[in-house]
Image (cartoon, rainbow, N blue to C red; front, side):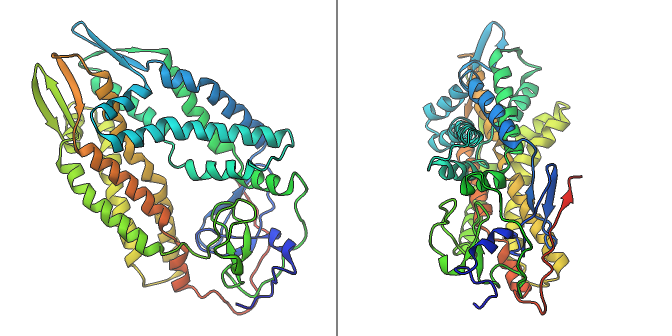
Length: 443
């Protein structure tokens, strides 16, 4: 496609441009001051934010998280006491309990989301910040940052912490609860993980890795007779947001190594397949029992809805509402929301496209929180094992529910919101695009 920007002849000009990952609008790369952020004027997507002292903050938080990681994983979190019986558990024991009961898929998801991926994130962020702070640029740095960005949505320590709170509320009336030092360490690790994600300036890290600390290219951005990167013969790397020529599609990004694609390959077909699978798994996940309680040898099974009713009946309306939203409404909203985005083709007003894009971003944000019920069951099964008196066991719905969570998260990651903008907004507009720098102060 012809363009006034010839990439082989003017490669440095690309460094002064970027494109919105959600609507593909071509824009100047924001020149932000510390504490400022920039948003896409067409769809509202945050294009960048400059975090003061990002390297130092990331290094301190990730190092603290690594120091506390082993105590958080190995020390007991809580002990439940009832009629002379006592039982305690840590994070790893809750995973082992799933494995011993032959719920292998659920055990794998809990292991990855609470043990493996959080450790990988802490190691990646620490090594990145340490090397960049010392002005060392080994060849593995791009792979570390790439790994961090791929895994950050799958580490769910904050959801597990909320699961601990729900477990405490659920069992506070029937058992005595003893808090151990492990829960203090685990809470600190959660805060470090969330804090690291908040202060890690991805754009700054990518620029330092690519330019080895050199000053970025400055000067006025080039004027292009197109409104989108695709219309200018360019494509955006979905991971590091570096622009490249469409002729490079299918090759590896020169900065992060991710495969370059103008649009996600077969995005609609893959998203449809995943949300249909999620809808199928959702039925047994809510009909079959997810937990079995053995009291004096008499088993009693309960579904997700039964657990929600228990919280409402006992007066714990807030916790019951959290479980209802996370376990029922969130999966339904993701399945229905993605289906609407795939089916809705007209009308195509810019305001409606803006709303659809915001819906998609909400779907991506809420997807992980459906794991809450799985974490609550994992804790209860590990903590309540008083022999013949009472014990809590996992039931078949746990596997189907974990599959719902996994398929809906993959569905959100395969959907490409730029496709609906392509259908409704032509890539070329008469005249030149206003490429003045965007600088929006943080509210």
